[in-house]
Length: 508
Image 1 (spheres, one colour):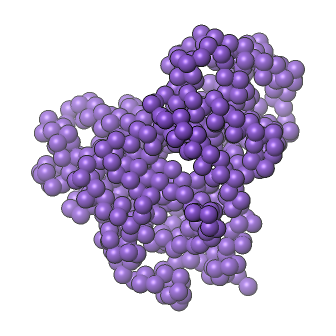
Image 2: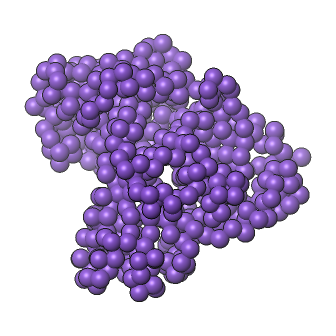
């Protein structure tokens, strides 16, 4: 017997799933969110939904999709209602619960309904912008903010804010609270600077710039919750069977949650959903939260994912169940990364946080795919780990051996052997894997033209345009990386000689 689809109609038939759902689904729109990813749905949208159910925030979210692919049909079919399975350990107790999230009101494609998105700027009650466009999304580009739509997220945001400025004649009350959740240091400040530059390039009214600076609050933030990508079929089948319906938007997360937002009392009053959960922290300075999470959790993920994956493992949990990779991960985090955090962090606090992260990595309920962590691998390596590496060398002239091993695995992972439809694929034991990184064409060329993997390592480490510094100048680091590349040098399949045929790998 086929299961019914989760939707508002099903909630009418099953009031046990979401009590008071009619009132929750009728709440006014107060947030516009750029992005539909699982992290946004599993953290910011989770807090908004929880606050709504407690009668605190009483507002819903308009979601903007940058593309027409990746779940548009599911959002339309389910009318934006989705399930959130929360599984793990909290305060020593096992948690396994399912939440129906009704916080999203609409999901709009930027490519086909840009005018509808701009119309949202005319809503006086819609005062919050949230985004997660990955680390590479907050970049200054040659963009046309009058296009339908602009290409970049900052371009879209500039156009949206300019529309709002015109709609309300630049009134102070029409200013917005803008909270990017991308893992970039000072993300709020950087996004504001890009928006101001876009306004300058497009010769917008000087009064618009004044309105931006005086009445809008660009708040840096830090999101911390492990929310893997699309759950595997086994997990979906298990949860569907337990709940008695199917959900194509199902997400799974750990229990731990933190959204640290840099903001004033005014920001706190606008983001009133923060009152619903201790996981939302709004403070004038969030540097400590950011550095601990960015360098230890995200930095360890980035340095370990390629190594574990190329060793035949598929998930973080499997990596923690394997004695060798588990030891690598723990030693890397606690003995190399924690002491080198480029911020004044108490050593005991860093160790405490690191041990908490290791417990989270061991969560038996979460299947966090390693290959998902490699998305935008190069940008993540640069932003999350290179500052820590440079900080290490301020305290020691010895090469960090485990860091070098993880970096070498990154170079090996970034070796395409197959192109198809503009996508790049690597090879793990004869099976293709997707290289979802903007630097894939660069590495494709480097692997094709390098005399050997050792030569490739030297050229890539010396590339200042990639790392903002010459990594070959760090004492012993190049030699340490090369020592781990030696295995690749002995494997013919890890290097494509110019003019030779690539290994034959079928890509569906």
